[in-house]
Amino acid sequence: MITISKSSYIRGLQCEKSFYLNFFHKQFGIQRDVQDTKKFEIGHDVGRYAQGLFPGGVDCGYAKTNDRVKSCQLTKQAIAEGKEVIYEAAFEYDGLLCFADIMVNNGEQWIIYEVKSTTSVKEYHINDAAFQYYVISNNVPVQDAFVVHLNNQYIRNGEIDINQLFVKESVLEKVLNLQDEIKITIPHFKKLTSAKSIPDIKLGKHCDDPFACDFKGYCWRDIPEYSVFDLQNMRGKQFDLYNQGVVEIKDIPKDYPLNDKQRIEVNSFLNNKDHLNKEAVNEFLSKISYPLYFMDFESYMSAIPEYNNVRPYQQIPFQFSLYYKENMKAEAVPFSFLAEPEGDPRQQFIENLINQTQRPGAIIVFNAGFEKSRINELARDFPEFAEELSNIHSRIIDLMVPFRDKAYYKPEMHSSYSMKYVLPAIDPNYTYDNLIIQDGTQAGSEFLRLRTISDETQTTQIRKDLIDYCNRDTYGMVLILEELEKLT
Ligand code: SF4
Image (cartoon, rainbow, N blue to C red; front, side):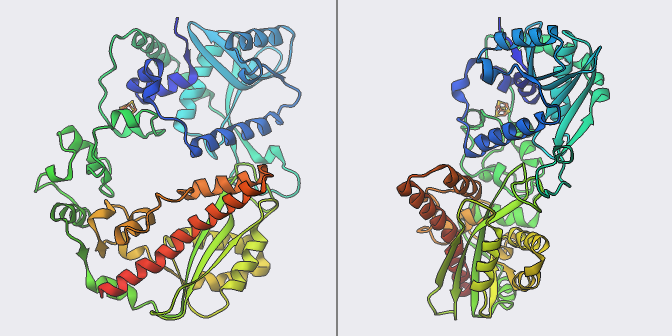
């Protein structure tokens, strides 16, 4: 008989097709990527810390037994022996299975604590806790159910204070309200496990909500590389079009209501022609005068603050790349900073940044919100450098603006104004395909991986990959600005 786990149940609530495929055609799903693995690691880290809220528990988890039946037996045994705290307590009921992160006995009844690595309670956490309550309350009496999540107001000062790091929120009322629904949903899901064919579910918002579905590669395989799903700010209208049989940009009805930017994207694609609002580009360029810096930061974050003055999930900048260009015709001169992986990289980062931006000149970045936020956080956490950091902040100009505003658009940008699309559209020699590191999340993971590697050849290679990646973004800005200058 098929057992429905909590994760299968949550998957089924998102999409019945995904529920079915996960049972019978797992091979159609994707392998977990770096980001997902990272999320998994974060979850485990947070879970381990949260156990400290109720120390001395017995671990009955799958990681210990490698067998769900054994985990259930261990849990039963722990309960029978009168243990007060159980970690990863496993329960089965009527073909359903769940593990509770922490269970605490108050004498007569049990309290369930489900640990989440988020900084608030999400809707799917309630469904998750409701399923657990349903299974567990059919095994033992349950007094309350809590979601334990990270406190985004917590600032580390010395040793981690786990009572401040976590927030415990009772979700009992909401969980009880869902019990009747669960009683209807479970038989329906069980029926699905004996269905002869894959449920016919169309693409929709549910493919990414609350999670990006593992089966997108399979269900979305016929969607062209550039389609109605790529147009910016469609706010769900892309699915209206899809449901009317319109997937390709060329099939969008002429009178279909699109905003000005979407119209530019569509016309540019249909006519295979660049769009240029010369006046807007000129106005943007009028704010820029040489000499110029071009700058890009990389950062990582961790759920549990590693250093003093750091909050959960705070971005920790560890690398920057700069190019300095004296005048329009001069060669751009590079400088790279990459911190050592051990210890707090921020002070070295700040000192190098201040030193390397001493010469006069505005600082060009792409998507200024990221760099400006990091500088604000550094100024807040290192007030002794606040004045110099504020000076750097005030010199920043965002090169993304003319692309976000569609002052200049090329069909190859595929409706995006991110650097990963803008740069190759402007200069096809500068793609990201030939780089080992493909995005900022991977850069953060690779930096952290340096801590675990002692082989010098390997660490040298990772450091080179990081520098190549960061430089690609920064030198890309040099090329993009040159292109705008040529246009006008
Ligand atoms: S990609 Fe969308 S339709 Fe396909 S299984 Fe996933 S959620 Fe369902």
